[in-house]
Length: 152
Image (cartoon, rainbow, N blue to C red):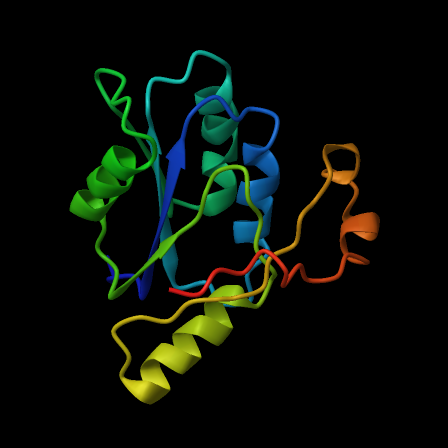
């Protein structure tokens, strides 16, 4: 099996309402040399079932790891578990209640390769109100929220 260029790590905890949209945005990528590692932090809703329903769509590129006990550490412990399982040259962290644009992996991979970069990141953020989360037409009309950007 070929090593993926990108390992996408998605921590999961009680997001059955959003995780399908997250996975759809990954499936829509123009760049396809990636694996997806979802790490469940003991969800009590049907989040895992939603992810499992997507497995056939990913053709073997989606895996689920379930932590044995709740980490209570936010996303850091699931992300670290995802890193242990990752095989890609690059790692992309995506929260399970977020979605990405269809060219995100392609653009970031191209930049990383062309500059031999260790780290690349995005700055655009779109705040999506719950009432239009599942309406792709309305979401496509949103403008980037640059007021919430934080400099480090």
